[in-house]
Image 1: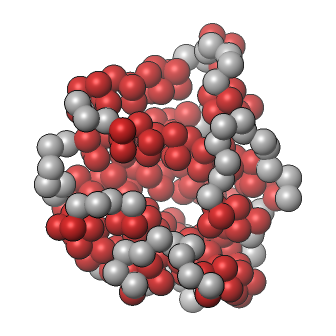
Image 2: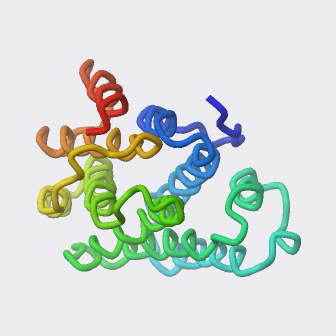
Length: 221
């Protein structure tokens, strides 16, 4: 699989499977997206003072506002963004904005979580929009379900997890079948549905997870 190696950012198993079922020209940008998403998620998870977390997230927005040639080098994720996302940084800024909604004082509200989910999926929708083969509405529902279910699986707050799972369950139906080249979205959606049914367990937990992911990648639903 032609994925760029990003030092210090090994991709989660579900990400690697999903990327493998995307169009070849989308695989490198998708892998960079997941690496950035993981980095931002760690910033939020380790933040005890919201203002400090906001400052760390703002650094990324500042970098995206600069031309690639004016950005510092040496950060593996930022370097990869320059190689694979030049000209599309606005969507990555939306991802940063999405994660920032997770820094509000608890408990997280429904609107904060939906803003988080919409920001988190913005880069993926941006990638597929020019191809006109995946409905943004249908893809958005599936990807929001993934964003919320994945967040639920990684939170220790019981009430917030329940709200995330409820919102994930309330997303609209997915397409009957994702087009070839976008079946990575079906992988994420299938794993998200399974996680929600299991009360917010990790997406790849259990022996059947990989089989469900591979089946979704092959069939597109």
